[in-house]
Length: 91
Image 1: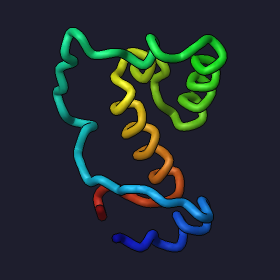
Image 2: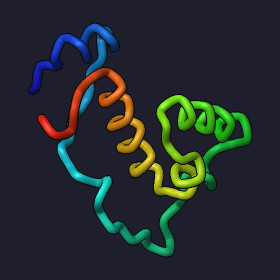
Image 3: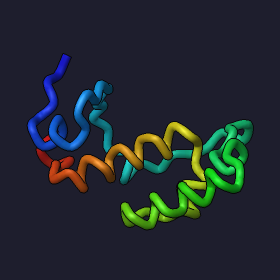
C-alpha cells in the first residue's frame, strides 16, 4: 500500500484510495457502442453539480458528460491531484 504524500493526506484527511498511473490524456480511446455514458446515469441536479466541478477544475463538462463513468472518475482524480500540487510527470 502506498503512503500518500503530506499535501494529499493534509488535503483529504482519512482518504483511502487507489492511485493508478496511466496516461489517459493522450490516449485515443474508442467507446464501445454499448457503453453507458455519464449523461445517461446522472439526473439534472447531478449534471449541474458535475458542470460546476468541471468548471472549478478547468475540465470540459461536455467531454465529461459524454464519457464513460470510469473515464470521468479518472479525469476528476487527475485534475484534483494536480490542483493539490502533484505532477503526473513525477508519478
